[in-house]
Length: 122
Length: 390
Image 1: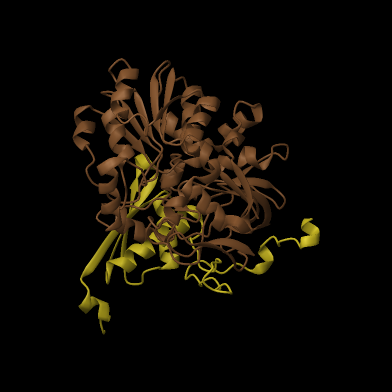
Image 2: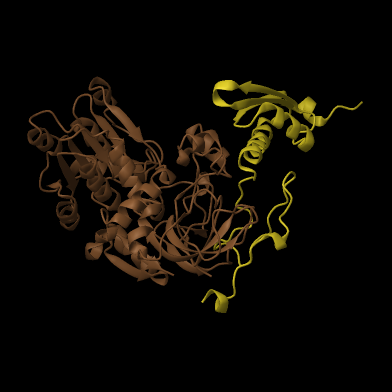
């Protein structure tokens, strides 16, 4: 078996986050989504907060670990991952399409309540 | 659509930009009917808030009509007239559950930037730099509102925009500033800064039971508003050089029980102190000019409470922490937990107890935003609060 390059170039990184959801639910979703392949994840209930501390270790840069763990928390608690990708600005003439999320599918357009036409709005 | 874009220090432009779209299932799109320029927008305008990018759409006080909703939005429908809180909150994290909405753990897509600067990240904010999420703001014809089930509050058609627009920022910010003071009946509260937040803090300090509220500013028209609409006792610090001494004399030598810093990071100071702060800020040896905060710490009564709704962004110098420590002061501050107060304050507006329209000095077109920003910064034409109409 050939080890991934990260195992040689990076020591093990470790990060923890508190997620306000039950531990069994989080463990199940973690296994389904597998957001950090090869990572070791530990789920420890915190009864007085009705939350779970998720601790993850992985050979690789800590920054990526922290960011993926943050997205997992967002998805588990809020049901979506915070984003500004695709919003307007004065920097460009056309919006960039939203970035595909590895764990949240892009919304089908027919699920969005359409904006009324100007005549309708009036 | 047309939108106010930040293009650098003292440079905002009204530009053609694409319309926003639904990006997440609980997003809504709001067609803006009114939007205001906040005093804290001047910190962006002056180039004092880091992580702004040219082309960012700014503005965090706005209201309008819901014109589009994502598939998971159930609290709003098309046609609803809403006011939107400036802080963006998911409604489900530990902080939101504790009603500390502006500390939301999940709404800031750029939390990593804030963590580098502050250790932890606050919530996302509309139109207020990339370290607070980089969200496009509401000084535009349309705005995307994330977590639409949580933030926007539906307002009745019977109330004009100018009566309810400020529920998204100034009213809750003034209220929280006063609430933090834990005012007991008859106590004295001193408020530095008579901009819209300061005026509201003065008003609410009175409503919450203060016996006397002392207003400190240098603009006569603002002090007049504080006197007329909030029954404050004014101190013009360009006439009264020893503000701390004056406050001591006015309170039988004890000092005010609570002091509110509604000035924040761009405090003006006469004489060498002001020169020192300005120079240090200019050469980037400090990010903020904290003169009002210094005075607040000096003036507050022993064992008193200091409440800071004024925005601070980074680091500053020569703050008398020893005074705060030796007097046993309690310091309370932070971005407003807007969601906590909106409905309560809407009820006060509906009952006629509260009418914030007295602050509105100018109503202008969105297209006039560059001139509006210049006028507000220079405090020309008795400018206190500007509402822009797209």
